[in-house]
Length: 296
Image (cartoon, rainbow, N blue to C red; front, side):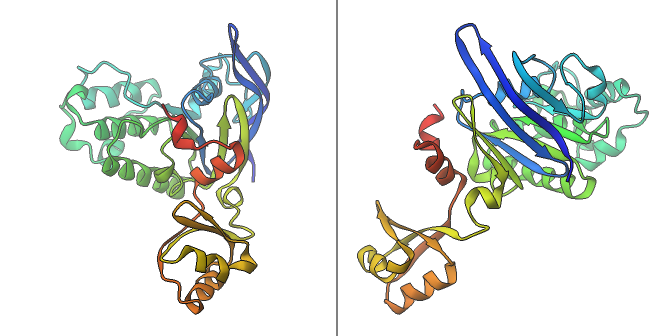
């Protein structure tokens, strides 16, 4: 599988602050890659460099085989989505879509308007739209140049859970049906891990991990499970061969989920809740810090 983004030894500093420290990662063509990390970890700086809005101090950056810095040609093949719509809010949806379409010499963008169910909002001013529909308008406009790659910086940060799920469903369908590669930064891990195929994790300006989601969570070898049971001590004894341990109110264990459930059933331990390892757990394992504690 070819790579649409390649970063090698990228460093960026602002006065005395080091934003990115010799980072390297790649993004596979056709993937939905999540770029995750707490606020202030270097996500937005990286995305600005990938988008050609900022120049790195050292290192090599290749996007679609080109250096993105001060390169208008790259905009013909990629699009950028921000956390909110940074355009004149008094424009109507129709005016906004048609203005963007004219930049790419697209004669009739009505198919995009219809695809995103924006027809009934044609004459509505952008300022009058909900946050969810503003992001739909932004995503619709991002398709007007038929991009191979869409880079999105916290696109669901200001959305409610319903709008967030709808937005993520659209991304999944665009990836599946049109083959668009997505590189999405976010700190909302619970929704993101349902969508992405690959993950790049950054913390304090350094890349912590870069791989497929399955490899990142350790699921290619064995499941890491967090289990809530009625008798934790009995559960640990029953799962002795799995090296289970008590963590707060839960039991943490690695291994085959079927064998673990069978062992607990035989020991007459009631399972109240069971889940696999999450991106939050993986972040904690690699950094020693809880992801949610670093969002403020």
